[in-house]
Image (cartoon, rainbow, N blue to C red; front, side):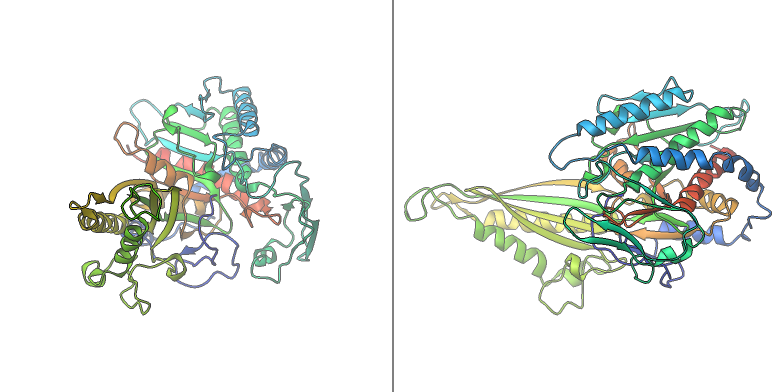
Amino acid sequence: MKKLLSFLPALLLTGLFSTAAQATPARVSPLTAQVARNLAAVQMHAPTTPDNNPQRRNKTLVEQYRSTLFDRFLQYVTYNSQSSYTEEITPDQIATAKKLYEEIKSLGYPQAQLSEHHYIFVKIPSNLPEGQQAPILGFSAHYDVTPDVTTNNVHAQVIKNYRGNKIDLGVNPKGERQVLDPDTPRDAYLKTRIGKTIVTSDGTTNLGADNRAGMSILITLLQLLAENPNRPHGEIQMVIAPNEETGGAADYITEVPYRPEIAFDFDGSVDGELMVNNFNALQILVTVKGHEGHQSNADGTYINHGLAAADLVKQVYEDPSIPRRFAGNSIVNPQSTNGHWLRLPTESRNMEGYLDVFIQRPANDVTIVDFRARSFAQADLDEIEQFIREITAFLAQKYDDENTQKKVTFSIETKSTYNNVGETAHPASLDVARAAFAGAGVTMRPVSERAGTTGAIFVAATKNEEEKIVGSFMLLTGQNNMHSYVEWLSEEDMFNGFWIGLNIMDEVARLKK
């Protein structure tokens, strides 16, 4: 799961802080209007308890695959599938994709696809009775792991019947001792794992549970379906993507025919979390161009463009009309006391958005002002984009000196990096998830995440109707302390994610298309 922002504790739907704060991206409770309406509709009905839920019949079946799931995870952590900030795809990712592809084919899926850019895709046709149609169900995960911490030569430590003690992992390559301590906020969730099985690295590498846990769940679900062909289900599509950790999971997603109508992503953490909301992300690049020349010659060709770029930044943040014009926009801080009205990341909390800014100077005559906007509401980003375009057009006229021909030019390009899955998810997604969680005896906790996900990147990259991919809520996989030497896996949470995935298949099969 890509970590794009600061880490804050998760907030429960009730607004209370979780007693087991995790070192995961900030997650907050208020939901988008559509998701909130869906959740309210679900909660109007009496909750289905695990004891009377018909999906409890899956308990015997999933228990048969518990050790298989766990052993598969331990095998996958030996695959070094790190992505890279400098390579389009690494040789180790390619090797991992080929191994997974061959494994999936050997499970009984000769029709599985490995695309040119190493996306793995499997389509399982519906086996529902003729005339009965359910929405196409999509499951996704990613097989790369973070480039930030090495996952080469992982030595996994399996701790069964954990006793609640500190765990000394040893010394990392920087010479720093790595300890898991349940008495710290970061590792407090360990207190709930007493008597359970957990997995850590030996402190010299990242474990890579993000997202080898999700990979393990998807491929074990494929094995279960292949070995139980008479279980009724609608059409199911699965995709495992590269480069999620570097933001490239959707770069070539259109190479495979992954087009679900209701979808879930296996890349979440623990304790019943279901990510139903995430940031929309928009990048706005304004290129300000002057002219090269020697600054000492007043009559030469040099034209300063830095002042124009600074003027742009100042006006974008400090225009006095902002609080009145954009009332209700989560990026705007109408109570600002520091002179700028648009929030920076350090001023943004919970459901508040922000606008960050970076300055690049790729050439002597060019400055690029790189605005990065985040909000749970796409409409907020649309307003800010239009505002920046208006200011840019005004400055283009201001710095167009027709008398001296010393003209500074402005140009804009934008990129939608990822979108809120809650704004495009199937309307039954929350209802389906709730029943699936209940059937596994897991209390569902809808959360919002101040970052992006694989599903969010898919949505942003597929805008036209032919390629459009719906938003996918993100399911727990057992990951903890991701992207660090102290990452660890909760075996029970990974197993629960697997069980919930099977239950989701049943619930979607009951829906009418």
